[in-house]
Amino acid sequence: MATARRGKTTAAPDAAPQTRVLKKYPNRRLYDTQTSSYITLADVKAMVLQGLSFEVRDAKTNEDLTRAILLQIILEEETGGVPMFSTALLEQVIRFYGHAMQGVMGAYLEQNMKSFADLQQRFTEQSKGLAFSPEAWTQFMSAQAPVMQGLMGNYMEQSKSLFTQMQERLQQAGQMFPAMNAFPAKK
Image (cartoon, rainbow, N blue to C red):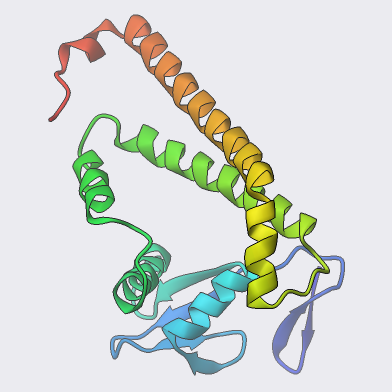
């Protein structure tokens, strides 16, 4: 339930968090309607890291620009430091655009990212409360090699299972709709 105070809407303590609206103006500036101030991409990145729900809207057309802003943040991260994506991986992702598997690949990657995030959270919870110097952390991690191998093994098994399920669904779809088999795969 939302309540109004001095012209602003605030959420009641038991209400679900509202989606924060950011407006993007033609001068390329982002305006946070909740704080009534201009923000930077670094601020948007901080919102993502905090897990805040938001959307970016064009100030004139109200078009949803959230994905474009998130991709811009990824581009800055990739060019500004140690990249996460190799050139080969980026090339492979590009090859899936326009391919019959594009939608399936997106869902597969999303499920894999969720599984990996769950794995990361479990590891973080297991090491909570431990204050380490860089040297102690290195020793801890080398002692954790068997644990990490087990966790990564579980992750890889989940990933393999997701891929197998995807293949089975595609085979079922091919049996239900034989015309799908008439289209050759792009190379």
